[in-house]
Image 1 (tube, rainbow, N blue to C red):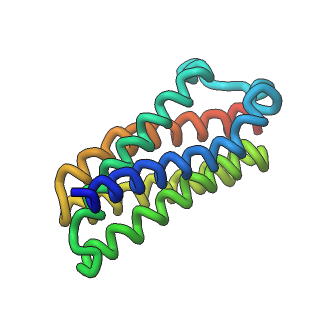
Image 2 (cartoon, helix red, strand yellow):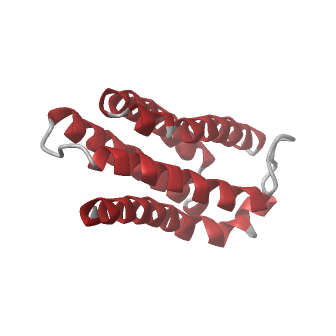
Length: 158
């Protein structure tokens, strides 16, 4: 029981820390550079992004926990953990490219890779634990929307 509580806390904190790291690149540009960009009509207000991302990273943490409960020596579990970490890295890198480097084009390329990595994570997690896979679907949906938003911002500001 204690072991599972530790895994649960680790998984949630690990994912939230990824979100915090991404926000380090994001927050300094929100009121400055980002505010100067032309945005599409469907762009949500800035205050929406933080609670959505906190919730998504929480769901990612629960999903990760369900995988960590399995035998970590299992080949499928190892593959699942690898693609999960890759998508988390791409998520952080997107914030760096878009907000820190002010490069919507490079960020768009990154978010396409992120979207693919999330799909691969969902597919791999489904082999291990269906609930873990389903918990990532809101994330995939939001990143799909974010990709459209990123593309639109890039095009409007070329």
